[in-house]
Structure formats: structure tokens, C-alpha cells
Length: 418
Ligand code: PGA
Ligand code: ZN
Image (tube, rainbow, N blue to C red; front, side):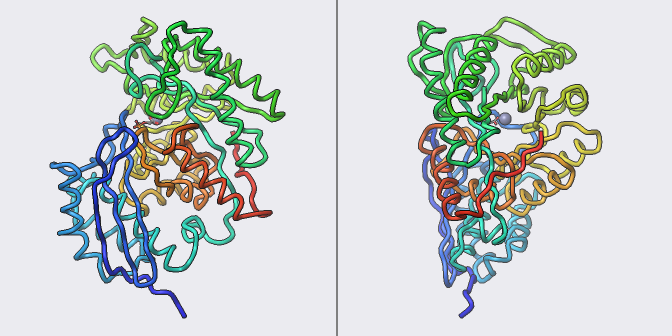
């Protein structure tokens, strides 16, 4: 008998994210299935992102689900995702989900997809991507961090990342990142006498060291792990440059290092780091409105992903603008930057059609939900950025280990062209 995906009931509740802050979780019941999703939150958010919650916060978001969204969505088919997401836009009525909140849209949209998948007895990645999808993303993980994800004297650059590009399986890739994270603990202890083993929001070590020292430490550890495991482990950065940019003085302020750089100097600095440390990935090297700077850096760098997070905010129009001038060659895909699954899917597909690498990403404030692991496989995304340690990060990694097992012999690593 054919399964029914007709939505019968929707419930919303307040739960906590990994920072201990409130967020929204939504349950969706169809005639034949059940789905649940909870929304993450960022700390270094882009100005052009969807507004996370309505005025009144999570409590108000729950009210919106109960009073405005549920009555419109009950009775619709959960597998008609586009229609559901269009209803969310219609109820909200603004460009950036000011009225219902991007996180509310996220939780409803993903819970609906989850319920549709369950109604058909499929895993979410199979339901979204089809049964021929069998590629696993490379895990990009935050190993040392500072910026807005830590306090005190941590690094100015927000994230020092690991990407095990030579791994032949997802499980091996995850092991490489975890080994590198463990290895760094002792290296950092030698560099910083005050190092307590403290970590930032995403489980990355947060020592009191300079950016250059962090890069040296990463470079040493990745060389050691490459040798030990026998496949190539490379490193990258999320500069989160909007957090460093002083719009009045028009300089990037590196407080910890006591240095200021104008746009030209910033581009030269990043190029020198790419060369010196053989960086495979640099995210947000320039502030969120500097499409021209991204263009210049992309044309001058080779063999490195130049990724836009705050620049593109998973927004199809901003990505289109980037594509038209060749600004960047990779894009962070964070569904709650834009709100719905349909919007997210369109942005990721536009990226792929134009040779941009989609990097499906967590937020610094996460829940234990693992939907983004399924989204990455469904899209055939070559990279997932979701941390290395911490329960809420491990939830995504472990889910991908299970998916790899479920795919069995069909499982293979995605094609990552750099
Ligand atoms: P977030 O940032 O704090 O906005 O989640 C993470 C990132 O910049 O990639
Ligand atoms: Zn970022």
C-alpha cells in the first residue's frame, strides 16, 4: 500500500543548543510517519542572514508555529516540500523571515522532510537525494579557534581547520581529524604555558597564541598525521574577516597580534599564508560585502578553495552576484541563514552548476540533530564542515559513519576538485 504523507499534527517546543541557549524544535506527524528537527544558531552571523527568531524570541516562534503555521500546513502533503516552504514564505511575508524567524522556518521545513522520509520508510538522505546517491563528504573540522567563538586572548582568526583530502573512506577521514585534534593538545601545551585545555564553542582548542604560531602548530600536526596514517591531511582557515573589519578605518584589526591590514595588505597576507602553509581552504578571508576583494584573491590563488560564508549567506542572489564576477569558488551552505530546505537546495544546486564547491555546514551553537549529515549526502556535497569533537558535532560525524555503512560497497568519497 502506498504510504500517506498527509500532515496531521505539528508540535513545537523550546530546547537548548550546545551553548545552553534556547532554540526551537518541531515535531511533524503524518498519517504514516514522524519527523523532528531543531534549529542551530550562529555567533559570527552575516548581516544578510535571515533573522533567527521573531521579536519575543523562541516563545514567540512557538506561538507562530501553533497559531499561524500549523493551521496552514496540516492537511498538506509532507513530500510536497516546495509547497510547504512557499507557505512558510507566504505566512512570513518578508525577505528575511523577520516575522516567523529563519530558525522557525528551518525547524518546520526540515521536520516536514524528516516526516516525509519516515512515511516512506527511507533515510532522509535517500528521500532527499534519491537511491543512486552514494558519495560521502570530506569532513572539514575546527581544531584551533578564537574570534567570536572564544574569549580572552585566543587567536584573531576564528578557525584553523583540518581537511583529510587523501582519505579513502569517511571513517578514515574522521579518524584523521580526531587524531590531529588530540595531537594538537600536546603541541599547544608546549607553545602556551598557560594552556588549560580550554576549548571554544565548536570544540576547537582555544590557546593564547598568535595566528602564526597556530598555523605552525597545525602544519606540524598535519604533517605528522599524514605520515602516520599514510594519506594526505591538509589544513585551512575560516578567517571570519567581517569580525576583524573596522568599516570606519577600512582596515582588518588583528587585536591579539597587534596588527592592522588594509584590503590590499589583507589579500597579500592571505596569499602568503596559502603559499607558506599549502592551505587547501580559506573561508571569509575578506569582509561580507567585499565581492571585489574575493574576486581578486580568487584570481590570484591556485589550488585553494576560497569560500564565502558571510559573503553569500546561502542566498541565491548573493551567490549569483559572486558567480558573475568569479568571486570565490566555494560556498558555505547553512540552511538557517536562508530558512527553508527549498531555498537551500536551490542555492547549493546553483553553486554546483557553476563549479562552486558547496560546503554543508553546522553553526557554532548546534543541537544534537544530524539532518545536515543527510543533506550533505543528498546534495553530493564534497565537504561537510561540522567540527571534530563535542557531542553535537560528533552526532553529525557518527551519522555519516552509519550512512557509509548503510551504503556498503556503493559508498565512496565525493569528488573534491581543488
Ligand atoms: P557561526 O559561525 O558562529 O555563525 O555559526 C561559524 C562560521 O563562521 O563558519
Ligand atoms: Zn564562517
